[in-house]
Image 1: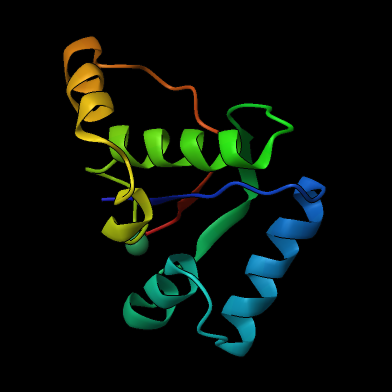
Image 2: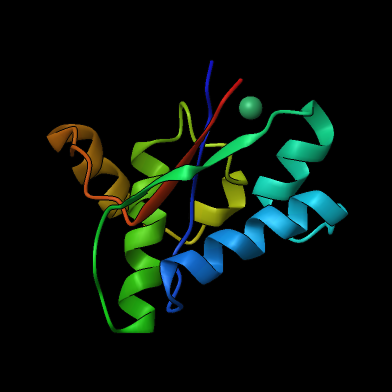
Length: 111
Ligand SMILES: [Zn+2]
């Protein structure tokens, strides 16, 4: 099943994506995306990245990132701890609303 990686960034999208790409190439063990690549050999489709949301405030981006990871937990290859700070209040709301796709950045792998 294709996995996706969700991550917030304040950088230009292209810069962040090429960072992930080069981290994969040199095997730098920095994030869940790189570790997934190292462990499984799956390659991410870095040409097809979606911008899921825009938010200038860092704390709000972190919150949105956790929401998106939580909603996408079935397919997201993010570490479970990436959404670990999310209060159960929000988790319950999300479960009820079955919130759709408001994510910031995803990258599907091509496996
Ligand atoms: Zn994969």
